[in-house]
Image (cartoon, rainbow, N blue to C red; front, side, top):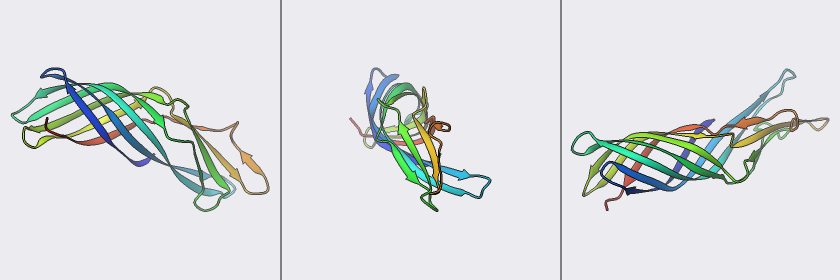
Length: 178
């Protein structure tokens, strides 16, 4: 895994002064690098990205810590749909490639979030926090392949890498005033 990013929109519905429900739509771009090194001198890497769309539903509770500051804790689930399967070639030569196949129908994940919020009536709410995204199973499977033109070493039946899709984010959010 490499540095990745996500952005989206969240709607919050207050149940009472302590509890809320959040839902929305997020776009997630996860970046990966897969390298090959072996004992006959083959050394290459391929970089690829996995795009997905997430619909989270979280139950949120918050505690007022001062006049404008609130501590937030949220738990929930999300349904995620991967945009497409991925094929990428090596950076040095096209003999090395990888094919990543997405999980059909999407996948579900556990969400957990912890953060602080600064609230004002005039300027809205500013939030900073961290989130955990933990799928219940792998999200895709990557198959590396090396073909030097003389013989093809196709590892599809013998070797694959499960991509589990876990990640932690640093969240910056802004909520408009009502």
